[in-house]
Length: 345
Ligand SMILES: [Zn+2]
Image (cartoon, rainbow, N blue to C red):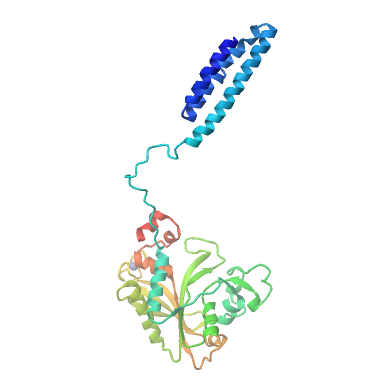
């Protein structure tokens, strides 16, 4: 039996040394030392031997097993050290994997196009923190003290500041207009500037309401700035963005920070004013409110309302994007679905 153990371990050693892969090593290990392996089978016969012979044979068998086990581990390391990095032949002539092309989101693209249009008319780009205060979000903008927008139902107030007032009561900006007073206080008038960005409303989200969305606002402040010039400005911007003349109409509108205020409608670009689902068969779509800065707002900005006037434009980016692409459900633009968005590259 000792001879048998010796023969088996010799064979196993040769097989292990010749093995060239981990799979082969495992196979050899099973063949000799597995549950029904050759060495294991021999060991099972030990019980039939005389006690003395059982002892020597058992020792020899264990020694052989340990030795094979050790050799197996060594070969495993050797094989993994010598293994090629690729487990298949490398063909350098195969075409590579093309990374997915990136692209601007249609709303971002619209915002950039508006930037181009305004900057070409001498406007400058301004931005401020998304955290504002009651002073800049409401007080400076002529919102009366009991205006509902000041309630926490509409505005996100920051923890531990809600029982404070004015500059110390902090919020996520509910609109961009606060930046207009901040800019004028810093740089004075005359001024032409744009200040696009994200705003926050404490609303339950549904098909038409989001808690965070992008707005685009512009303000021009000059001495004697007539309303007609404001309208010309809007028509010029729309023409630059859409690449052709766009008909607009003005209606009276009320916002605390303007006097007088207006709503601007543009002719539906999808149906050309005929009436369609996008414009709800009206032929017009409301795209931007605005108006002349209220005297109280000019005062808050440190300007004499008798000397200065101007024009606010607050552009609905979503609406312009709907008009540009003729898409009636604006939620598609916020869905993050690349199958939809990648059409607009
Ligand atoms: Zn239409």
